[in-house]
Image 1 (cartoon, rainbow, N blue to C red):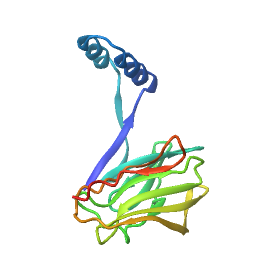
Image 2 (image 1 turned 90 degrees about the vertical axis):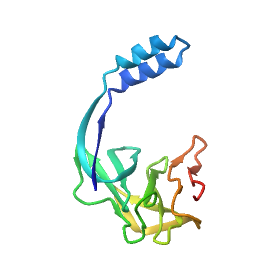
Image 3 (image 1 turned 120 degrees about the vertical axis):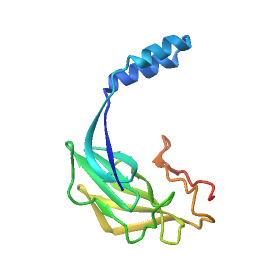
Image 4 (image 1 turned 180 degrees about the vertical axis):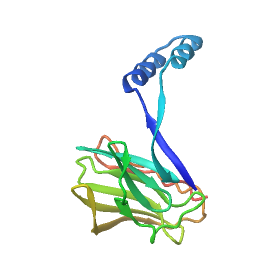
Length: 173
């Protein structure tokens, strides 16, 4: 099933609301300020079950993971016609399984994907980027974990301020 994945945030308004709400004020005052925020959602792409998104240093594109195993790029408000990465042959998707997370190295030279394979087990792979394209031949598996159940597979994947890669593995069911 296709899901429309879109948003436009007025960042300065959202930031000021967040900082105002984090101060110690009465609940009704914070609620009123939050209610005054101007957030407009604008459709930008039609995607199949988006599960995660990431940005890449030096690149204006928004990269979106589709549960079936594709990474798509939205550039200048338009979806690139071809996937940046297509690992559908390796991904077992449906329910809580599939391509669940993606991120880029802090310098943008590598992309990392967190997915469940066809056997339902967790995998994290690294690929080198070559311009705006993934170098498919550079695939390096970083993690392989057997999952005891088909649910609770986690999926979050990101670099911490210490430069290390972190992931949410889930409790395996």
